[in-house]
Length: 248
Image 1 (tube, helix red, strand yellow):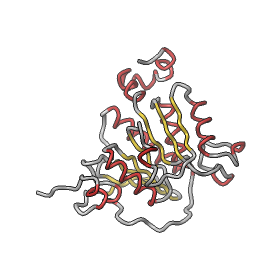
Image 2 (image 1 turned 90 degrees about the horizontal axis):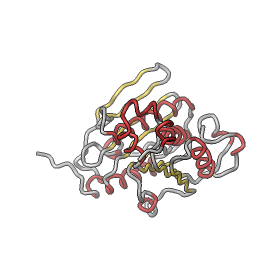
Image 3 (image 1 turned 60 degrees about the vertical axis):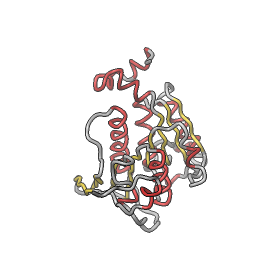
Image 4 (image 1 turned 30 degrees about the vertical axis):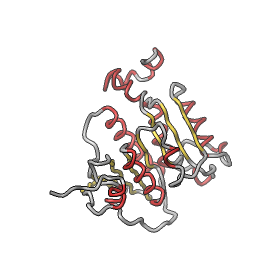
């Protein structure tokens, strides 16, 4: 049930999808991988929207160079763990939700434990080695993965529904080279907001998701494009999860 404070807090959303929709969000546990640029936007808007439990995981500390885009953290947080800073910020935004902030490195060994009790995965990472861990876990647990990535003015997003859509490895069979890329805070805002909107629609069962579609954002031209994604019958991750495509 929603208490009186929640009804008032979410009143403008309830106009969109009713109290039943808000209750669905309240019952949803979200796993957010990373408390950086994308993770900041994703977690802030998920907290504000009323996702009932947010578990955000990051192993780093706040640096001054983070603050142009990582809006979870403020100048006074430099030197603190990002997990601790994230928890304080998110609980300040919405004390009605449960916030779990873990100072951990996501790995193949701990991903199952980290995901316990979570209904969906938000990809806010900056490397594909960890993204592949998230992808494989999503397939095995049959929970959705909402992917986002940015570089400078450009960004991308797609939604992975296990057994229904192309997975992340289907779309990106090889990881791009690891590099330190430029990052603009407003690009994180665009892509992170799209990811949260996808998660809201998934929980509510409304609208059309970015299924089998990779959305591409170009901030320099203020334009969006799409690339079709298809399931790869030879995908290693799908096969190991027992979700390989059966061709007619």
